Image 1 (tube, rainbow, N blue to C red):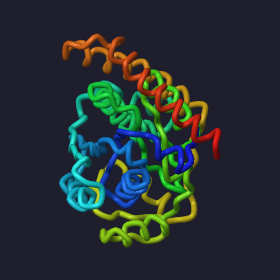
Image 2: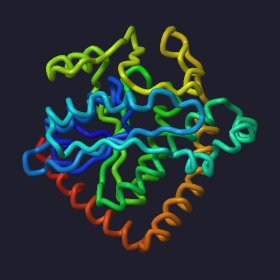
Image 3: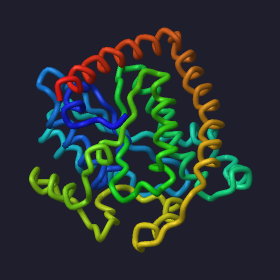
Image 4: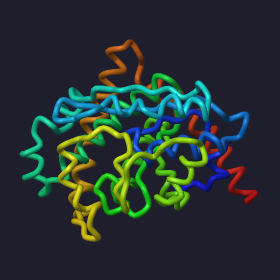
Length: 278
């Protein structure tokens, strides 16, 4: 469910699928600076790299000191290699997936779901109940940001006691406002034009298949039914990976998940209080 700024203010710890570019740099600032004083928990920035033509990964560290200046040392940044997870979810069989689901989008969506798999594991081990993606206004057509993708991810993350939201979409924050947020906080947004904004984020050569969608006012569309089927199939693999990894680390997966759901429900009660008074 979309949240208002007042509702975001009562959330505590959160992780961010963080590239280090404009969108993902703005999200922790907007949410972190508006949290209620008693709710200011950890901010966990997770940048992912892989063995399949991901370049300049260290660029993602550019803004970490600046975000810590603005938000304090509760900001943590981790550069994570998720190649092995992505292999299990689909990178090793992306041609078969492309034929099965009928689209080149499978490889990029599979990569995002691999990031999500790691993120859920990370959250469960640390009791984090919120994950934010950095989908931006005007980019909702992208397969990773489509309503069907967001809706299905919301339900999947919720199984583990993790709230999945896209703050920029929820709050209607566009690129001009994003650049202004960084300017006010003394942070260089880096190079950008129109909706495209490279900033200082790493470059994935595979992802360049979508670059024309950003540069021109024409973009491909993706079939919601096939995207939904793809996600449902991958969720089965993701759950196996999550539970297997927790077991290998000595956890009881069900106990850990139940504890996170309890924390999630506590935050839901706070959200309901805010909603009732607004």
